[in-house]
Length: 112
Length: 111
Image (tube, rainbow over all chains, first blue to last red; front, side, top):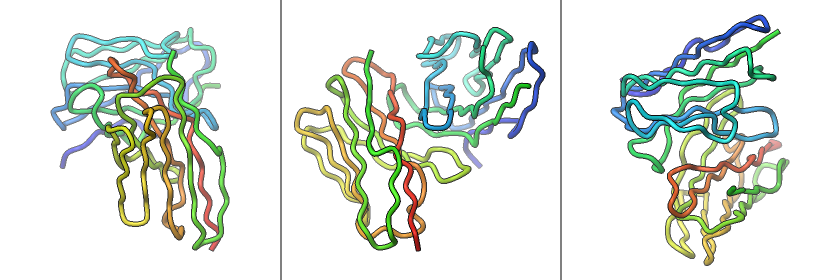
């Protein structure tokens, strides 16, 4: 059963804590992406990775960090430096950079 | 940087009416993709347009790419309640692998 999994679906954290969101794919895709979705804002790119051990900042990378040690995995850490972390986070992958993207089910993060 | 504007932000239609959403880029695009996100769900890829003036159809959905490759549209004929959701365009700039998403058009269909 191929696809992208994100866990957990809902996540609650206290302000000042770092939190890591999981993203795993078994589609053998080279490229992976993290987006943030806020009401009325569409999808904004946080980080993307075109290949293992390489990643680039997107439009809103401040306060976030990523790693890409394995082709299948692209975890996102939301640090305490992110001023407004409460949002819906979507992970996506594509067979190659620029191709159609397949999205995971998302993680809804609430920080209080 | 590249900007992709999408209008309208919201659209309410009676079931059976047509619907159109428009996408405009500040720069020439190498391609444009369209996605649909159902309420509570995640975006799902619908189609990609690459050629200037390209028109593609999927049943009641018609997608167009402008001659200058800076604008695109999605038209739905005779909407159904299953069409409810948010439709996003995403443009890929020339020489870039990055997609820039529009803010989406949220479609509501009144039965």
